Image (cartoon, rainbow, N blue to C red; front, side):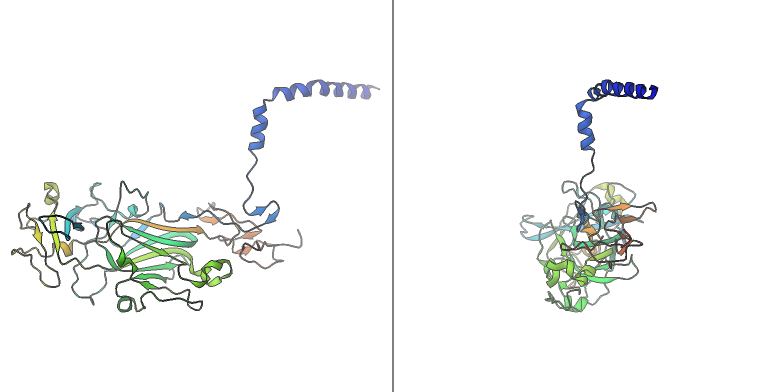
Length: 399
């Protein structure tokens, strides 16, 4: 009897108090509760597994680059740039060469490798420059071998590599791009650029690929067509490769676009124009940084340079004939690498693990940095790369 009476009191209390509690909760709380629900997982269509990939990014952004040569790193050095002159003392169409100073100790004259992967702002261009290149008058001379090495820290599937060169900088003639898929242990040719592909790299110019050799690096002289101050080289990893439209079913091309590291090797600059004009930066502070007696001409004088391969003197009797050639540098403002973190279709993003390493956040019962295997006890179905038709989810009979 007592127990029945207690239950009756409890029921009455609940009936009276619950409406008050509900009324005390504002409507926006309910809205927040529904809004807090996690978004749908890109790797699943409700409960069915499906192919998913991380976002497309510039994988080079903010990543340090190792340069084999940097202008002004150890001492003040002179560099020279060229621009077309439409009207300078009536010399229409000639090249105007302007020289300046690079000095890593001065923030206004630094050209560090960090400029290659910082924010690319066309209104505030930052540049990396190599040390001045020794003048070359013999095509058979040793290559310059100035290198830029980028380590991505994980496997990526790359779509393009773009090198944006600094305004007015000398244009390169021969460039080799290599990739590594094993964190720099071995290197494989990725692309070549040269006006003399056969002579420099032993490859035909603009060769046509077929399904039997679509994993081979090509050489092209297409970069020679670039002109003006907005000069860049853009390498598309799948351009001209027959299986590009069916990448999911082409293990050969999947390996081809996979890289952990990129290395660019500058072998030769384009030869200076024969009608180059030279002007010197007349800032007295810059001149003080140079060795005394470097320039013997009057500051205000414009000098005409003859082709380097013809003579080592300036018309008019000057002895500083190598001003243009010896001041030329490789100069790049942006090094970008477009691609996706490689997860074999089993993850929608990459994260940093507790070891500080970039890894895929694997789904579909897969595991590994690249979701390249099934996780333990899920071997009932062999591992496979996810495709648009089949997610190839790893399965276990026990579950």
